[in-house]
Image (cartoon, rainbow, N blue to C red; front, side, top):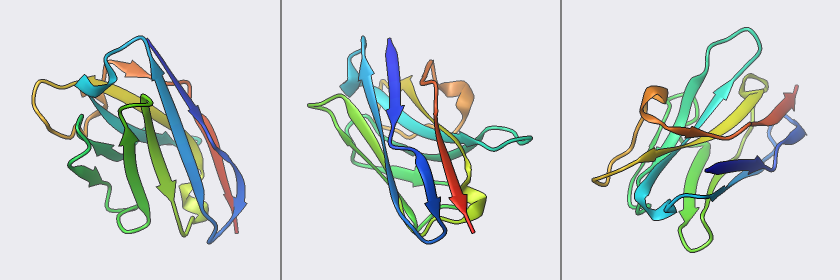
Length: 125
């Protein structure tokens, strides 16, 4: 199983970025997907998640209204659209996959079996 994130970069505050995560080696439509982030010196934190079918999402309060998760099961991809970026959004962003028997969102990192290597997002003030 491989999860590969892309789309990170250096942007100014207020800008937008779209992260992508491409999955291989798994039946993608059977997995709930999540995005997490880890800033230097801080613990990994939940950003948002989407059900295996894409019919429901969940977000951390810190990104609600600014970030949007979507997925394309035909392409084995999940996306994180990030708008109105703030310096405090600076972190390495990871996508993760959790096997899902029912359509649910997973908010704990412990629920995820597979992780990508991350992509750096840096927001300057």
